[in-house]
Amino acid sequence: MSARYHCLIYSNSYHQARNALSELAEFAVKYDTDGIDIYFLNNSAVERNVRNPDDVRTLFNKIQPSGVTNIGTTLEKLISEYLDDLDEAEEKSGRAGMKKIKHVNYIVITDGEATDDPESVIVQAAKRLDSKFCPITQIGIQFVQIGPLQSAARFLAELDDALVRKHRIRDIVDTTRYSGKKLNAETLIKILVGGINRRVDAEGARVFRADHQGEEGLGKVIKS
Image (cartoon, rainbow, N blue to C red; front, side, top):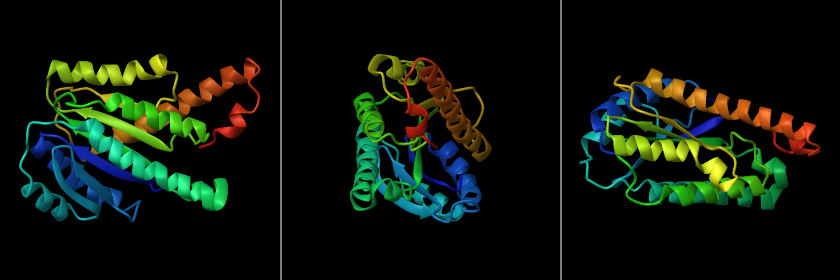
């Protein structure tokens, strides 16, 4: 947790998200003094470096849900800014500078499918990371479904299962589909840590296979 800067993005399921994030803010500040950043998919309100549960509740009380789920647009803005920071660090100080940029995880909590195109945003981000030989944990995107909407479940399944095969890119997406249980901070933390560990384990297996197929140096280039 301490090495990663957390941006959290939400849709219309405000009550569960508010309560879960209030708990998460209190937990996260113990490990990351930057706190958490909160963005809304359907509102321009932003709260950065949140460390206090009361600040989370105050923010949510000011927001009114709307019907759009602009996952692609919101992710594109945030990821582009982050990757531009990586580019600048590399230009100034090389890989040593890039290592000073905290890894980032975006948790997208939504009860519906996107109303725009997050796939192309994710693919372009993964390609930029691959071109820089960034660690597999440099960027992670965790989609969390609240509510039983089947169209949302199908949308998340497509993002989780198909992008790597379809576009031959690194895996930066994990999804957690609706289980019938309420969302809380403990669940979010398990999702976050589980996604990181899964990507690291998967990358280790891929490098092992590549090494045995003669792709020298891949294991040296991609480090976490």
